[in-house]
Amino acid sequence: MKIAYILNTYPQPSHSFIRREIHALEAQGHDIYRIAMRPSAAALVDPLDQAEDAKTEHVLAQGAGQLGRALFRVLRSDAAAFFAAAKVALDLGAASESSRTRHLIYLAEACYVLERCNAEGITHMHAHFGTNAAAVAMLAHLLGGPEYSFTVHGPEEFDAPRALSLGTKMHHAAFTVAISNFGRSQLCRWAAAEDWDRIKVVHCGIEPARFGDPAPLPKGPRRVVSIGRFVEQKGQLLLIDALAKTEDPDLHLTLLGDGEMRGMIEARIAQHGLQSRVSLPGWVDEARVRSELAAAHGFVMPSFAEGLPMVIMEAMAAARPVIATYIAGTPELVQDGKTGWMVPAGDADALAGALDDLAKATPQKLTKMGEAGRVRALARHDVAIEAAKLASHII
Image 1: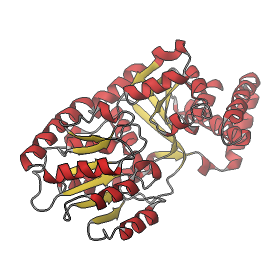
Image 2: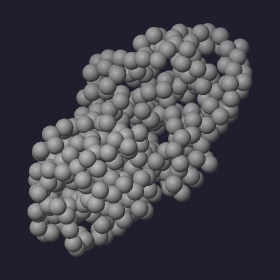
Image 3: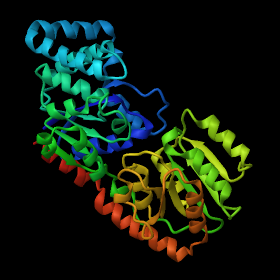
Image 4: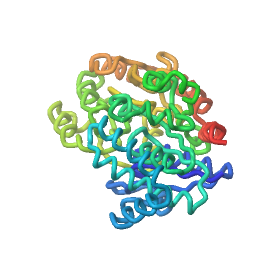
């Protein structure tokens, strides 16, 4: 089976789960053609991302002339299909928060994608996220291309389901993937009832082989690590406020990642006088992530909105207790009191209390929590098993 992965920006540091899914499908004998609208604007520090970049065709890099020629070739070959797809693109643009013009650009991208799929012998297209990549896949299908599916992660799609025309995209898709039961429930809100059976749950996955025997808990003062883009929804500012409220003056936090809010986070750290207790290494590769988890006593994810974070699965697979918030699909994975602590999103006092609980917990309790989390994550999020599920829906 030859599958085209239709993506917006790929590869990029925060989307390693897509890379793992692709590699798992390839390991199972499927041929994957990577086509993204644009490359990452961020520097790719992980060699695995750099290798993916070399394998990915970037549509907008072809230039407006190439896309325009593809559009006119598709128009000449099947005018009826072209104008039907153009009407859908205009309807999407009318509902969107952008413009009809942008969606006509998506139509041109879809024409190029259609020609590349035909040239490569693609039998199915799969997109990640219900945004423009799903729109391009849908339009390419309506132009006469292969069937398509797409994975919805959230929270962005759930914030603007009408503007993204999720119902339309799900209706035309062979199937739609949610990454949690919560995600599926949200998609059912915007899909026609007759389309519900085609909404499937396929978890994002981790590679168990990369998580061998977990490192023992480190000696010394308690350390926690958090990983994610520095954006509002990830809650890092609240985490700094919570850290300032904790009772243990030696509790140390490492924030892995980067983004537009870095300056605000640094200012908040300085405001609380926490410079010696917070580290900001920036984006790091997967090997560094594993070493940071090994050096920590726990992982904290203070998000306000999520899908189901990959980093929580990775922390649990590394046998580290998790502090997370009661949002989206997270409670389906993290079990309060068993694999970590769950707190209300946006509550700095509750988050500080969970950090204090972790700091006071005995090594034996933390180890037991970590082991329970590891078993749960590896059982529910093996990427090979989840990729096989995805493939079974395509065949």
